[in-house]
Length: 412
Ligand code: FAD
Ligand code: UDP
Image (cartoon, rainbow, N blue to C red):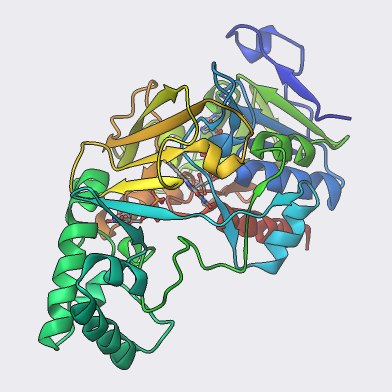
């Protein structure tokens, strides 16, 4: 068995075609990434609903989609995705649809040609400093924060001890400053502190990028996982549909909350709509574009494998790209060739050729997002869900949990 997926062959108006037209359903879901696919499965299976899932791309999986590239290497088309979670519920739920290959992600920073483990840890200190100084620094860190502590760089920079302060400056300048400037176009102080806190200084010798209890890669890849998730008799998937072709809103409410009813392909619709795209797009950017960072993803092909010393190398003081990732480290694919991805971050301009990857979390942008969110509040069956629709910097597992919890609420 495989999921019921209708591929639209050429762009056409939904009213002009019948094959797989996603209208007769109890729940319409927009977007076949983790948010849309998890809730589709839950509503179909637990709720017994007829679910139609529409997706504007030609494939399922959202940004976690993977496929073989032209050289036969399994790549992640929208950037490297490594699964890790501290949620037992998420892990058990996903394990219904995939077996996992043990994998713990390792990242090295290239600092003027020297490779240092990231997150910056006691091992990094030993690699970066002469033995006496390294011992002094590791002892100080352990005494001040305790073995096993995770100290955000912004916190470490507040340390009063002059030696710790010196260490903080070293880490700030060699690991965080330029990488953050490339990734966000801003300094670490100018962005939400939770972003750099994702990669804290580790008072530990642990050289793994993530410390979650469950980590791994889906044995047959992410796309196969999504195929299984969406393989349910109550789910149909309709690829090649942009939401605005199908969904329209009656606007008879107040100016801040104008939408009062949903129409699907011109007909009134009383069912659920779970929307996982960007809310500003759906509202035709009436308050302006919600800011995002996008990525230029450049794939380089090699006739040897491996090419680099770790799965990911962060270029923290040089190069225009932020990081390079070699996929065979992630996938353990047995192949003599290799593909390495370079990520170049830039401001998203809203053009169709670009993908909105990272919401730029911050007070002003959150306020603009709330104005968009407000537009839809009178629609009791309309639920924004996911990294785009909620304008939140979620990892995959956080989205899975959000989707499961929304399903709990809706099916209560
Ligand atoms: P998406 O995956 O973006 O899915 C949304 C889907 O909706 C897309 O398929 C889109 O085409 C579709 N859509 C949008 N608008 C419309 C519309 N108007 N009409 C029809 N369809 C529409 N997380 C981790 O846990 N580990 C990682 O290692 C990791 N690495 C990442 C690396 C990069 C470069 C990026 C950008 C993200 C990474 N993430 C990682 C985060 C992860 O990608 C997200 O948490 C996850 O993809 C969010 O799922 P989602 O369903 O909310 O969004
Ligand atoms: N960061 C950094 N240097 C690094 C790694 C991370 O400055 O070597 C900062 C940077 O601001 C980045 C943030 O920490 O955006 C979060 O990093 P993470 O690896 O979690 O980003 P993602 O994988 O989500 O792109």
